[in-house]
Length: 304
Image (cartoon, rainbow, N blue to C red; front, top):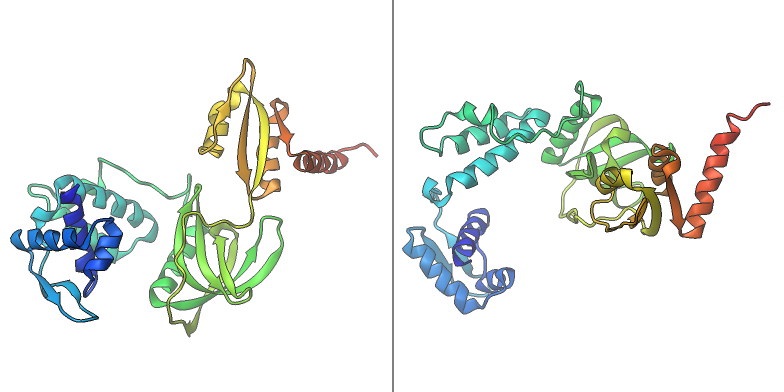
């Protein structure tokens, strides 16, 4: 919709000194002529857009311009508040709380505290009492903001420990867990670390500069393997939670699902929790590897 595009252009210009018509046209998949018409519409709405000529030219919003409340709907503000409210429980940042207060003040007749007591609640804290992750999270978040390097001890999925020094880039909440996306100086490459496996973390005095590769939502730890399992229909809900993007093929008593897995041992532990009513169908190599895994467990309980 044109209105959505106009609002998006305003937000982009508020966050950049200047943007070319060509860049805006490419982003919104329209012609540059359409962008020029959009700029005229924004100017007519009372938002002062300045045009800069030359090779480095483009459009920008007049300096010191303040974004008025009427640009946002009440629903827009409530959605932003909901996200900020969820973050305050974990980061406990005065900056985030202050930002939430400013947005809450944009809604007439509402008190700031209204949006921290009810309505939409986003709680990304773990169940039960607060864990060590809370403290580590705030330490990492502070290092990201100050662009300081971190050092820590890390245990991978198989329990192998290593010492790492990284340039932290982003904290990522994905698949029910928090991760640190960073540039690892030991591996000279980008790596993602699960926070629950990070120990003895410390912020170094060294800072880092320069642009870094941004986290991509399709970031893959290592090549995927297509795995098919057969399970009793009563496990359908649980299976769907673990593999939400995969389609289940149903039958009378048992169903099958094919999905991509990045760590076979992680899958084995899930299957063990479901007992005898679930089975790896393919590939043969994973099935045989799981049998070996089961035998190793069984040998620990064999009578001597």
